[in-house]
Image 1: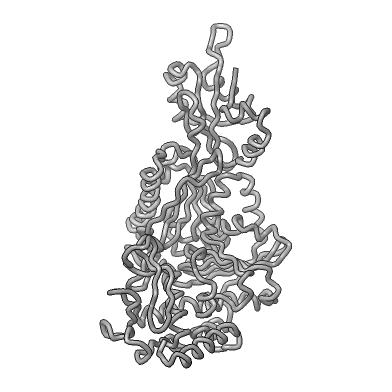
Image 2: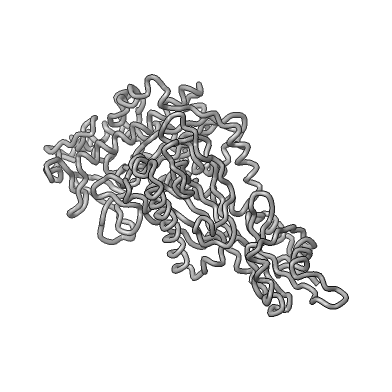
Length: 536
């Protein structure tokens, strides 16, 4: 007698549950088998007995050497009551583990966003689709340079240094795995498969491939579709395979393809804009008929990477700021003592200072406006929290980053012949996308001045797409379609890119007419200041 787990045994009596299980057709499986014992009359090998048992339940699989070596004495000890863990390798199912008894209820997988600054990982119950825990850590590659280019040059034509970066990349993933294990109680050895989404350079580093090709013409990548790789070969402790999302080009990587899977723009009848803002800025405009894409460097400022008191969005980070009657009011993640400021807090702070006149159109601090603005370490700085300063150089770095973001959107709209009014939605992705204030982002000119309801904070769509693929194997066909349909625009090839970026290096822009609601806000703040007779 051959049986699946209890959930599947009861499917005739629970149609909704059966529908759920059909939906969870991911890149891993756990199947419980109760196999007939060998006899002199029926003496098939253990290998064939298991493979036939799986086939009767609709799953054909391959049994690798490491599993063959486990058959004895496991099968006899278990009295042929076994659970098979299966991992998809891109072509078919591979048995990744055999366990005694019914362990089908312990079916887990991992989804990861391998960012250049931050690594975020989720532990997923692959039976229910539930996210059990989400954790993040700094990418340990940072010690080789806060910007990607520094890391690329560090290991150029130096295999030993490339291996250093690869090991730090793996260590970052393992750090997240350890934290997931400690916080959830789930052993990482129970995870069968993993999906990783990251930009092209991050995947090159992960696989130990020299990424100089990403930066240097003709931009012929070492590999753009690594697909399914054995976890043990990568040094990642999962039982089965690790899938790496493919890249479209050198600067448009798997994190964006993953974002397409998450938002399903490629299925929509309406035209949508997708913008992932992080160390790089990647943009996609399109619908079910076309996908136009482009990418360019933005800088680590959006993730707190180069701000002197910047930090990621974790406990102790200032994530929201408001200025009223000359006083700065900060919200701190965890409600404790502020330790630094993250991307969403920086955007709020800069927007509020601009609207209150503490910085001018070029982002220069105006010390006569408030006593909080003072000279610190040889330059002007504003004390936004006790002992924490936001420096003039921080402001300039951030303005360059937001200018790059704005210019990318402007170029893509021009090249596509589409106006912002024609777009149904403007999806904003990125590590801080779900937390950033729309009003603040518009005030500094990072987002276009448009109907706020059409600006959708997509959050970490790279991570969402990784989770979706972990649970829905059918997404693999969609990934191939997206890659095929995307038309890539190289921003560096646009003649007036630098001129447009210089024009955007102002708050919110040198052309105020593009931001009518921001101008209204400025007028209101000035009116309040005049009425109160105090400096805001």
